[in-house]
Length: 574
Image (cartoon, helix red, strand yellow):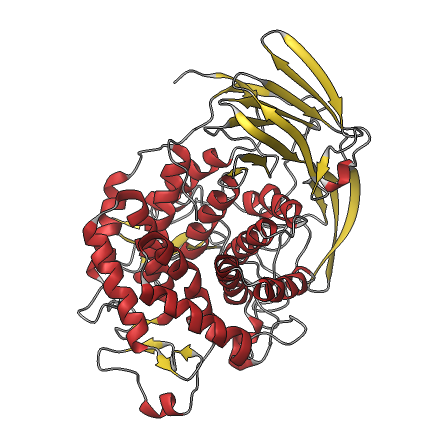
């Protein structure tokens, strides 16, 4: 690989490589390569623990995340562990086509097909099939989708699941079916639409499409999960308005609305999304729910916000490109665990509990993970309110965080009907052009064109205005200049039109940076954020365990380094 000088700024594909390290490191090699689910980093020494999520949910998240991370980064590290994860995932299926949790001698649960797990299972099988085309995977996925359809309770216009767990003998209570209990439809039905829709797009599965139709109808028109004003129903029966499952449902239905061309469905999602944003900070911290977990941010929820925002942006609500970029630059990447110098590893180490808990090299093995529960200003959530401190890492957030990196990376540059669009001002390579971002140090983006483009456009942040935007185009020794003040340079409010571009052309776009301070509210707590462009460069008050936003350095000129961008031969669309 030939290296060159590139800006030493955020590179999502490198972050995916770090996440891959954690996905490999959290495998329990003494327990069939089942990954540990959670980690407590505030104890001395820290430890990792198994749990009932270890099976379909954790393995599904890891298979999906590892495939996405490899596609982004090109890394081959840990392929032996990934192979074990894949084999384990397939072993959890029973003849009925569903994925079952397994008995653990230290666990408290019974074998069951938990409906939350099934979403991660079909998600991973879809990515696995996308990556390999393996007929064994398609056979398992077809059988799985058919089972999800078979066990659904079918009313005139909606389908639902009447319990959170399915047993080999059927639903735990026939009476529950008759009473139409449908517990937490967002968690058990709504979120499933997202991977089911992609599976339909990939294979043409009609079972998957039917599930999407009837689950979407359930959520919007019959479930009561969302109130008429778009707010989340915070009743205990609806998991206190649990953000991850509600936002994951919005992600799913936004995709289905875009797929079916249902403008009313997209508008409904936007209404709910805008309400959710009022409960989050501008840099991406989200509450866990509206009551008991309100002070705990799950990386899973933020990734749902990112994915929903991307679908809305592509559907014409272009203001959400900026929202997504702020989330990517700030709380998603700030929540990735790269510095472990604060974790206390000294003292006497207790003995491991086989198949349940380990103290072995926890800090090193978890490097690259994403925060399970974080405060706005601290990797660890240890507030007086809510549940206090519970844990610091969960495997679901590692898988989701990796998927969030991929969703951002895959939308930096897109192509549609001959128009190549630079949507997010982050660095990456592509078959069409390479983007080098000098943000947050300089208001500068360099586009190096790899092939002829019929029409090129680049999104300019809303805070940059248009009067002081300049661009220079260089090709074969000749240079031309232009500005954002020229007539007919703008479409959709935020996109600077650059017209045709030729292979070998270098286009430099510059604009002024915005320096500002905002007061951010997170569940009645206030923080002052200092911004440089779309990056938070300081946040007060500072955290006390592992402060976030306290080590970000900015310079008047962007530092450079040796590097290269990855240009995959085929872009994956998720």
